[in-house]
Structures are given as structure tokens and as C-alpha cells.
Image (cartoon, rainbow, N blue to C red; front, side, top):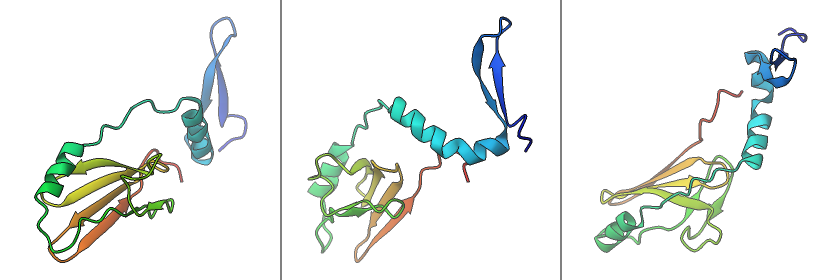
Length: 136
């Protein structure tokens, strides 16, 4: 990476600033900070619509020997709750539910996906961080 070319200012024909060009190697060093600032300045306005009807169907026909667990924990950022539905504001949003016993949540803090698979005698949990960019 060359210090003189790592960041280049883009101007129009009249010399008016239009933007900035950042070389890939420099981007790897600054992307996490830049994306965090962008998220603060322009927060996502997409409201997550939770599939509560699917969850209610699963709860209605739940026939396993244990109660349907309500605890959720994120291995990525450490957020956790004993009852995800009772939190205000929510720490986890329900993203998917089905009759096969699968529940998927999104961590509000770091956007990781927490998947809980309910089997006859056990529950398996996986946590997948959100892949937002190629930042190192």
C-alpha cells in the first residue's frame, strides 16, 4: 500500500469534491469503523416482522417431553436472555419458526443468527455471525 494513493479524493471537472476512493488494502484497516459510523448515521429502518403465527403453531402442537425453551444466547457478542419474548426492548428477534422444531433468532446487538433445533431428547444451538464485509 502506498501512502500517497491509499486514499484518493474524487472531484468533478470544476474541482468540486465528489467522494473518496480507498484502495482495498486500506479498506481492510478502516471498514469496521466506517461501517459502524454509517450505521449510526443511517440506522436500518427495516422492521423485522416476526413469524409469530408460525411460533404459535409450533407451541400449539408441541408434544415433546420438555417445555419449549425461551432462553437465547449469542456467542458472538455475549447477549443473552432467559425469555426472549419478555424483553423490552428485545435483545433477539424471531426470524423463523417451523413445526419441525426449528427456531431462528437474530441478535439485535450484532445481527448474528442463533438457530435452535429442538429434538425429542435435546436442543442444539448454533450461532453464526453476520458476514457484513470482508473486514479482517
